[in-house]
Length: 388
Image (cartoon, rainbow, N blue to C red; front, side):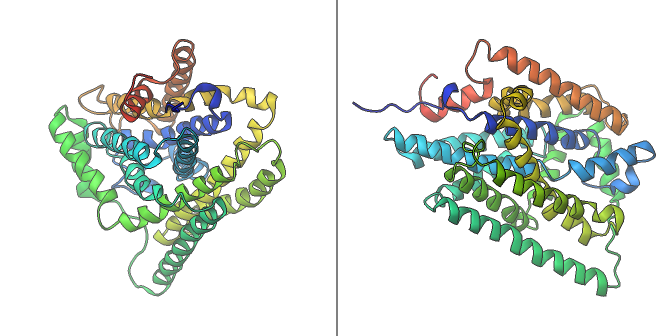
């Protein structure tokens, strides 16, 4: 009898995987909220935020900035391996399913990036996912070793290069504010002209994802996807209950190291070299600690129950991620409520937490009646070619 391909059913899901997705969505939303509300690409945050907002930003920079998108990237690789395993188990053709799935994700990413918010990550995930497909033949151990090497070695070399430049160059390596583009960005996003905002969105997206940055994006995303894929092949999350010592070891190593590297701009110097070390190395290493914490929490029944709401939101992570952008930009952009640069950082963070709580509640209610989130349903329909 022919095995039919269907998307992952509820009973097949890994609760710690969904819990991690939900947890990372909160951290991502806190950081994205600053981008929705202010021209973050063009200012020095040490100059932009004042008073209590500056103190709050320091805490956000230490514990949140650059430490949640890495989790998302690793989970992307983890999830792709699970899809591969299940497709092969059912006798299907993984590459065909994966290509369709990634192509749909690419379309969603394009719509998100250019019509909603320029900070989209789905385009990069889809494109790099096409590369990852051909790497999944490697063993879990090989994926982990190669992924870690591709992450650590280039970032260490570039960090060293920036440190040397900082020491020997007569040029100021401090962060600076681009007054002209900052003013232009504020004027456009504060206006009600959707077309002008769309043009600015494209410019902002190109500034981050253009040719000058693509190599850095490549070595910050692909390696993490490979690490996640390797962990999936080794079933690290599935075996968390019996491998608590391993997760505890990861936590003990990565938490102090990540916090140390992330604190360098705060306690030593906020030049570009230390900022790069903070973002690329410190942020990712701290994300390993967060993964270990969630894995340990989910390995115990009583603490796992506390994270159940995160798991519900993680089951519809695509829907929540996109709706966060829709709601966030509507609140701040001129075609919505027009609050761009008008709220304090503290108010924005409380707003983000409040919106996320509402999303979690709505996710719980949604899953009382439906098996998949709205966008997840559409994604699965076009991937598997049948109503699911």
